[in-house]
Image (cartoon, rainbow, N blue to C red; front, side, top):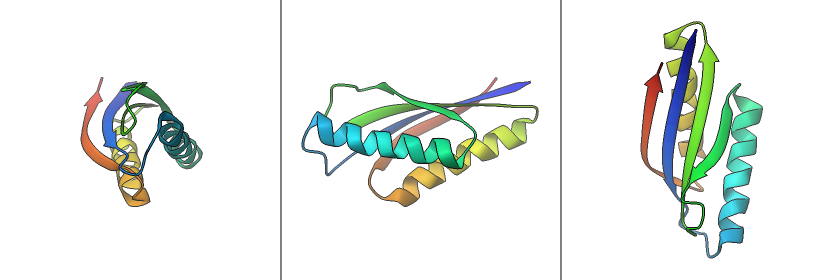
Length: 93
């Protein structure tokens, strides 16, 4: 069994308040959950208006598949254009 984890730091430039940020982050989380079979949550920078840290996890029997799924999530977040990815890291356990 392979567990893939990914931590993503994002910048939300259009956010003027925590309410704006949470609306954007919730929308991104819902889209990722519906499109990919992963667990995702906001795990850091909870009180900053324009930054968020997302934690993503996937369980698979194949390391290559787990890496592909997490890479697909990163590409999906980049395509949305609402948030800019500052940094991310993928780890397979």
